[in-house]
Image 1 (cartoon, rainbow, N blue to C red):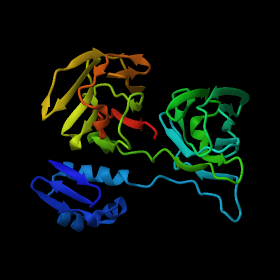
Image 2 (image 1 turned 90 degrees about the horizontal axis):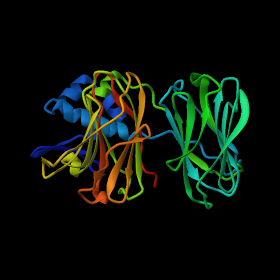
Image 3 (image 1 turned 120 degrees about the vertical axis):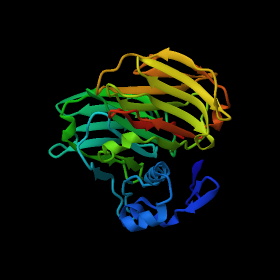
Length: 346
């Protein structure tokens, strides 16, 4: 078996270990010559190399909003998108709450306030959009000064959907073409920095990403009440596509959710290298190129599964929920694939 040792930058291969510190970053790997790659990785299986590439890619730093200077405090900071927005994109802004009104805004080349999310003390959110300044309001979780806050904007088929700390608060129909939005700016509400980090949509991925599985470590143990949300794009004719909640480097699986042909779901778990008894169900038919949202809710005694808001069969826990360490995704074929995941926010 193979596995990544993140602390020492090494890769375990069967009985031995290959030191990959010379490729400690994605930049190092990309800039390496073909001869260097063949010399260092020539005897390593291709799937192991791909897993290490995915690991390095996950270490890439996310863009960070520039904090206001202590000498000349600034109330506004901004950043630009690397490409036009499209359906399925997700924008996330993190920060720490302060006792003041603040906002997250999307702009176009001609409109500064093409979309505005206004957060008002103590827990009111208002949404305004260009073309019609009708206001949509919602209630957010009450925050004390210093509490962390995560705001997520999901570009759905016909509307923006807004989440605060993983809970959906409101939605707003598109009033301008989605690809006309060119950047984001924030109003901290004063000279004290509220918003500190932003995650923008990544550049378009190549089709080859659909050929491999992706592995994401959980930032903290799962607990009852947590929810994982995953969005994908369906391709007609795909082989099965799957979600694994695993431990021990993937050797043991607490929960497997397979979506198979014929609108069949198969749920199972693996312990000691052996699969246990299956639980089968069905899921609503999907159309080619359709976006779909899968939500896994950690209930008191079982995982509850939702596809586009429709609940399927549940899967009782077979091991301790808090021992799960990672999420593994299998994308399927024919261009089918997962492209967004929201983990529980801590």
